[in-house]
Length: 474
Image (cartoon, rainbow, N blue to C red; front, side, top):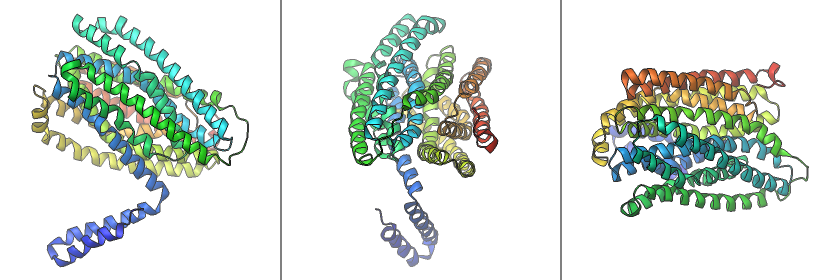
């Protein structure tokens, strides 16, 4: 384990030798105390592990759109790629996010059911999740190509390019679903490092193939890299989970449980909710397609920049808190869960507000660098869109924490109705505000929807934690 004393004591000794280094000395003492406290707390160690792994694992994912715009001139080609990728990611997220977050509470329960029961649950759920992902991706792609694309301003060549990219990216849907089952099962054992750090494989191979073979395959090199990277991640997670189950469940009981039906009872409403909620990004891109060429690229880059701080704040806190809440709810300690939820919510909201205040000026200051990397990109438009999207970051974080608690409590039946209301509001605001303000109008609409989602999800989460509602379905 890391010993913080040796490293920080050196800095403190240097600070004593120079009076003008007093601020450094104060910082070192405070950092030393904070690090010692963190290392002494298993929960904080898990938060640090999950946060660092997710941020590192998604760093290349956040950089990938900028690599694409740097290699390929922003315009019709990048618009087609981002539209196709956004479609597949949306369709995949509908299943994978629900499976990943719902798997952890069930794995926690199945630890006492025996090794074979847990292995059977993982294999069956992975197969069912992959099948559901294939079906959703197929139906979604048919709807997009037959109904959505003809209504946009894409040219025939762009529509043909989008169709090809959809075919190349389609294997991502079942692979991501299987990865979600394996990652969620890891979280049930409080193992966060490999599932989060392995996220770098998908985008890492995509970046490598794009830089190496963009002249040979064009933008299709990105698709090859994404699919190959996700397949490699599946293999690593499956191998590691097999070892964890063999060790952790060597002395488990032999209770006979049938968790698959209960799992999908919890996960299916969330799949529906994620499917509906993912329409928001598709609506944003579809509305942006009616604006000037390159608008989809600007919206995609701004949303990616916003996603980074949300990921930083929710990755560790959400994963670890969700697992803790599931264990506490299993023991019936509702009051403790409520207090912990409010404490985490306040802490995360304060951190999100600070991140927004810091990142908005940084993005504006980074415009020259962004302009030099992506020639022809309207960096002012990206910075303005990010600033407006960023207003919704604290509310997006609060909404995700509320959803985490609902999933841990297995109270997900109301989620599709709440999400559908947000999509309707987003569609109306997108169409109205984009006509008046263009891309900034789309960003304002997104921030407004995040605010409404936060109010609804947090309110429902607090409602189900009341003792009078313990036995009621949300």
